[in-house]
Image (tube, rainbow, N blue to C red; front, top):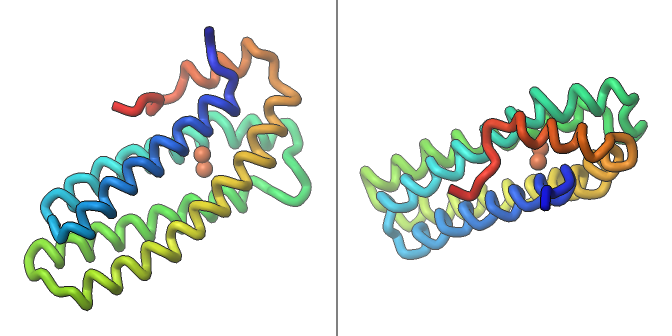
Length: 156
Ligand SMILES: [Fe+2]
Ligand SMILES: [Fe+2]
């Protein structure tokens, strides 16, 4: 059975959240080498997912007119913001690997709380606006084609 676009993409959001949790759990353990490695896995998956949306999903959404209160530039701006945060976390985690410091760790966790809030808003915008909009307008065949063209589609 093939998944519809909405279900499949929201499944990837769950997968991303699970990866970020593994990174944060390593931070809580002050296991900074593992935290850095898990953050890289998260970064690759998040960037690939956003790239798939920018290459495949958002152009189609724009062609179809999009929802008036959620223009494409809003999604693009959020993606850019998320990428900037993750790159900042890479730097901060690398600093912790070199020199463990609980103040730096707490600053990082505070920044990550802000990031998780952004992720939550972005998830809701896609869950409640972007993918329902497309689900109402794209045939099952076209949804399947978009899914097949993704570069990142698995929890691996
Ligand atoms: Fe997404
Ligand atoms: Fe997105």
